[in-house]
Length: 227
Figure 1 (tube, rainbow, N blue to C red):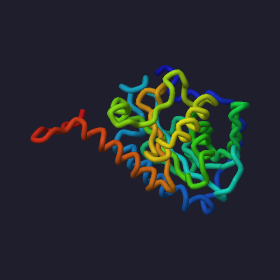
Figure 2 (figure 1 turned 60 degrees about the vertical axis):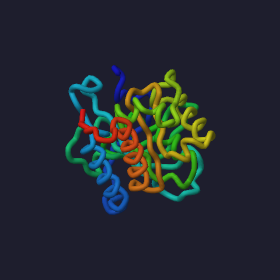
Figure 3 (figure 1 turned 60 degrees about the horizontal axis):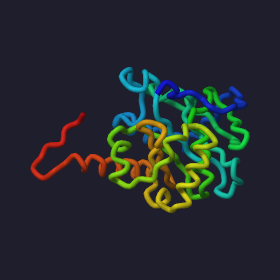
């Protein structure tokens, strides 16, 4: 896990403040769900996990549904902001363009883009109905991905790369990712991706599958304890 949080793409970033009046209506629901993910340990920073690097990020689509591929701009939490207890618009950036073949993107904001930005872009390119992407880390859900028959990217493919983008698109074409709204990242320990029409839709899908993973530990008459 030595490369957790490492940015693996080239990017052109303009450091500038984002307009609060323009983005408040979009960022507030996203921050609320990011808080829920932090409280459940799906996003955060822990010295005992991943060599202390922050993990997990959230994003929401901007603009019209019909924008062309690679130009479906989105608002995403910035790199290594996962461990912050309180976040605001200044902790986000806007990814305006992403180019998988050139492995680069263009962004703006007061913080650089998340290392998972290319993967978020790949999910948004799957369809105009996708308006929110959540990247979480859940050992229990990841370890039970096979039992739950979750779609899974190849273990040989690292996060934040053009190869990961192609893997996401391959899984979506199978129909399983589209149906479940959640996939496991085979080469990214504990990593899962959820999407939806809104932060609430994506968040509910993620928590539903997390609950199903915990069900595997529960038996009639038995206790279920946090670990």
